[in-house]
Length: 201
Ligand code: GRF
Image (cartoon, rainbow, N blue to C red; front, top):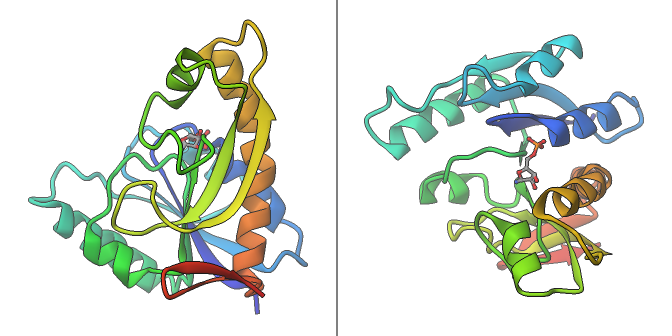
């Protein structure tokens, strides 16, 4: 049985596309069964539809609290019998209870070599600091932002003359390779979260 996987997006959805493409191979251990967006016009939704993947729009604004929005997310995931959730450019901070409930089954991708450069405007800060290397990280989601145990990481050189846009574009290429690898490891049980640490089997 392939692991039933949902992808949460807010925008472009290029990482979502790389996960959908990887899972189009029937031997891939995860199956993408649902895409959820909190943004109605998220471009990724078009690609999800083209790929024949069920999608759901859950706008966060009408909800009275973060917890109420997360409860609606959780319900949609349960209805679809989802086992693994991948955040892919999902621009909402999740509540502690959601992160705890999905602990070990919830992944995020971040465009830096975590624990360095958590948060936003990563590439600007990497260049401003004169870093020689950057990269991307797939990690388990824990309540603290961008702080969960690392599942997979890849680095690349920062080139002379890089702008935030050129660096972002090269990092994104690497993200598209790394995220399917990390999902594969989790779905196969080769990476798991135990006592707050990633264990590789
Ligand atoms: C990626 O750079 C990802 O690392 C970050 O947000 C961006 C999402 O891009 N979390 P996309 O929507 O997957 O194209």
